[in-house]
Length: 511
Image (tube, rainbow, N blue to C red; front, side):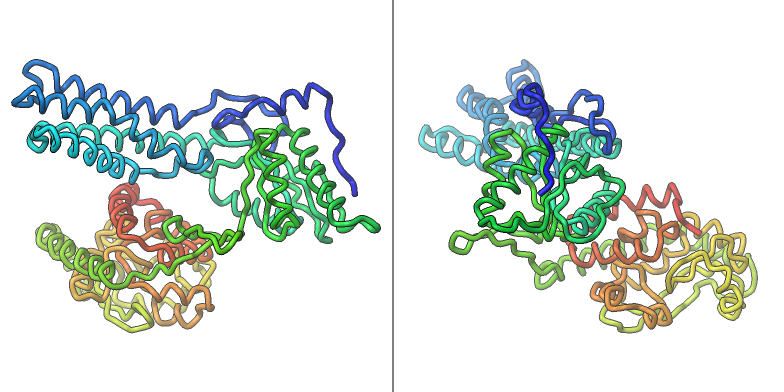
């Protein structure tokens, strides 16, 4: 076995230093980067919660302020809620993972409020103090709004820093070369993760490690003449020496690694003594957190990946929301749609509304409507333009399509040509949010993976539309649509509707 030699005693002393919450490294590939000022998201969140509680407390006791209780007892009750707010939130988030807890703990705010109100309500009932009323509602609104705003800011700030390679942990990846290559490729597609890969400790599997990651340790396939205990000790020692050499603050075990079961537990003990975090990469991609659950069976730990397709009340809620919002939008936007129809009529011969057969959920055909943006002979000329197609898959895309009218270019730039699809949504043929509705000839060219897009109702907007639209490759388009299909949630639909407005204004990838 070839291992990495230990550094000097100074290096060992540095390894005993407890790592900061995020070491904030600059540069993901440099083995000795300059440390920037770390972003401590827990401290920022706690400071925001404390400031929110202070505002609520001042509002309660400020003479003539916005929150005035009719009695001293009620004033003390709502003051208790304000004072206890940061403490309860801290307790609620104390068990959150320090690497990944910045992802969106908005539910903690509502759970903390419920717990605090329950305790104060019981005390008030015993003391015969009236709690409910205007002051209670005002204080609750201040606390929830302030803490939610704090978390939105912290999450956005953390995302910005991670996209610049900061607010991350120096990470050593451990595993076979093939597993390391796959992990590095996945991390490269997402610039918001907390792990900055700086080196690799490679287990020999006969393949070359990726050239983008420096190799600081190698683990041979076997140790002839040695028992399992000796091999376990040698494996762990190799990782430990690699960690000390690159001053890693986290170790990521990739798929296919020899570190499983008791060997992985022993590695966690060693890294725990060094103050280094241990994470394992299961190789799963595009699986949302709300679909995953951890459980145990005997002494084993199991990961449960739940089904994602909406059913029952969730499916009913999505359908009702779609149809209600689409009907309201049709009513509100009717003057604009009438103006667009007039402009399309004056742009040249042909119908105002273009009807085209598309493939909906589970492969069922439906007629999709949109304002006409092309000349009458557009469908006949498509075959002769296939050689100039800008796309790399079955979806036809052409940046400077000569079939588009002058009015059509404006409509496409701001997605105004798609407004008649609100009628399809009201009919239930489409959704406000979902994968792009495909043409029958496109579906005929789908492979097994792409065909899964048909599991969901097609939408007017979705992850594909707000992430670059026609600028994306076919593979990226399918990946984004499948991420939506596999991880659907009602809250994500609402977020995508909000992001659609910005995407339309920027008109990125619209042609």
